[in-house]
Length: 369
Ligand SMILES: Cc1ncc(COP(=O)(O)O)c(C=O)c1O
Image 1: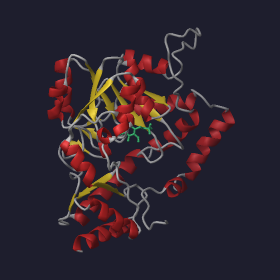
Image 2: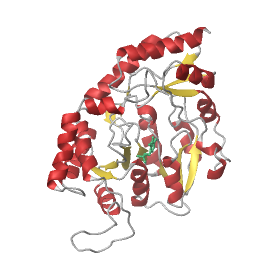
Image 3: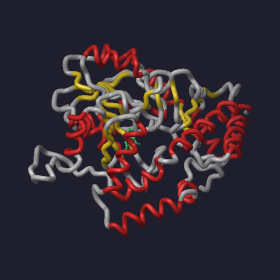
Image 4: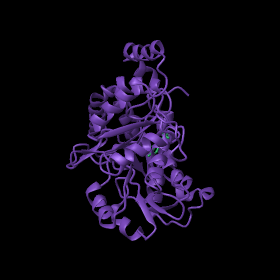
């Protein structure tokens, strides 16, 4: 089906910066710089600077960013890791791939971990907490950092959806032992395929991630220092990401503008719930996704799609309800209710104000029925 308003518009995104992207790719090809070369180092330096951390380490994808963080933090068999079920599967599958046990806590009305549930979930086996900064909004990190430091448990931030978002002026990915980012093409900063990064200000953690992503090999001596991975961010991706990183602040500004337009256009529509407003005190949200809630979610999705608006539902079924994952013992009523009600409507920097109006009108026409 061809939509009047797409969920994202990759061709338009490329068209607007074609000459810069093409030049970056050409530079890589001309220099034969494919793996772990200058462009990667420059992107890592610029990303670390943007986030206010000491190190950014490019890896193959956001999933590996979490996996390598946990491996570097020494998480393994018999350990427990606290996280949420309202997230992309990667947050939880990586815990299992470390042979550790996921302990799932419920979320709050802003879709992020309800920090009030964390302390009760801590046991002697808890070795990490993974908050997920979902939809471009940071968790309540003040309270979470206090709990983590009281119990001496490291925090690994799943910041895959929150590049540039901040809480009390501090950016996602700069709070915990490490931050994990995804450059999947639809993310705020998207590569030409898969990509990711780990951020940290901890020297020992950085050194381990640098080694782990490249076979745990000392490149000077050829010595293997342990069992590692091949999880490097390709130079080609790094070169393109570095070009895009310069535009990130203006893209974030545009995302927040569009969120304001939705907020104004949809205020008073009684059948839906809107996300918290963007200028909301301690939170600086970047709207990776603009998520609304409706008790008639499935009908609304159908109506919007047939009105020409592309919609994504993330996620209709929380992770603990997928039988094959073996997590059905968890009882997470807020997560379950939110999974029944959420839908994401289009929001991306290239989107026009007219497209926002079309989406708003389509939602209002559903509300009036
Ligand atoms: C919250 C969250 N965590 C982790 C990931 C995994 O990132 P990737 O797809 O780059 O492996 C994603 C990406 O969709 C995500 O949204």
